[in-house]
Length: 501
Image 1 (cartoon, rainbow, N blue to C red):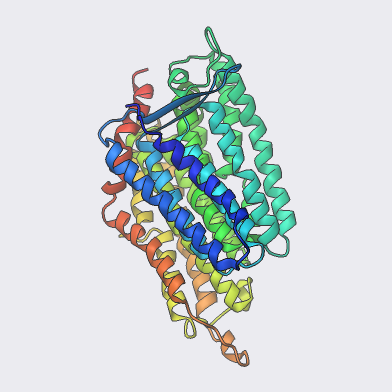
Image 2: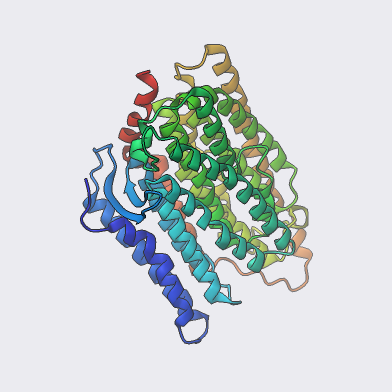
């Protein structure tokens, strides 16, 4: 279905184009920039929803709203966009979380023009990545993220912001080198002429050794972004220093780009190598759940504790992708969206609490549930969602991944039993570190001794933001089919590659 109206191009270009207009505004204080940015984010979200509701057929697993414009003639490089059931969820999540993160960035007053422009530039890059159908375009959008995140970190971060920003850029740029080599290798290994088009690359076959090399190169790039152990160490540092609105974008969307690339490129284009690598993915995912959960328990810094819990939850996505079953892959997509909401909310609440108390270390906190009951209620609710309480999105996603692994015909019974047992241990560790975090922050009596402490509870803006994220978390938990129906047909189409061989 080729769309005559370039919906996707408008969605990709609008935020960065509108963001660059901020610099031409007369300087009238921050209020104007804030409202302008929020209006742009809302307009983009409404356009996205409209385009998907009226121009996208859910029961069609093929690529829709296709656009294909010649860009650079010499290398047959096209501006190719298109979406299917796999990209709709992440695109809507991007719009939703970016709009709320803009609202969360309300207190930022220093150099706010640049701040809001960078947020809108990230918005464009993320939508471009989730809708690109050309390998080189995918890579360009992947790289477009780096500069805004680096600047947001190094200019509006905490005390060690330069260290964590440098670490972030070194890790991600290092991973991107492997990505670029893989992209050029796959593009140039054409039977007759070089091509970067996903549609043609799906039917391309490679020698097994070459396919494994490509797969491994892409995997390193995703392992940094996702993150997969041992390439995860930039994440806690980055989250520990970044402003909480940046953390919302990182936890909510940036980590999901790695998982999306793993499904979109490694699973779809390199099926032989994926079936060889998938047992390793399952093993690494299991180790990651346990390792990150136990490391999280030892973190004194509140934001770093939540960052390690993110790493732990990403382990479930890796296992779902490695299981090569309908349920496992659908569960991984569901976990991507579920963690996008929960992770963003936890970082927002942690950031606002730390700003109020001017503390980041857990052992210095205590007893703030009485002066701040609203923050306490929201924090507890999202922590319950994060530890997979039934009735919330985390529970459904992890359960579906469990079933996907157990029913996988690829693995023998004993390894499956063993891995399920280890995953279950990881799920027991999650409540331990989350509940101990809540106990240290909200209970006890530490803050009653502080003279004239005036802790303000959540204002209407923060409550509105928390409730906006809480509704989809509950909604997905009660009726997960709402999200699963988007990706089911596409997942079957991807997996038909594996079962017909």
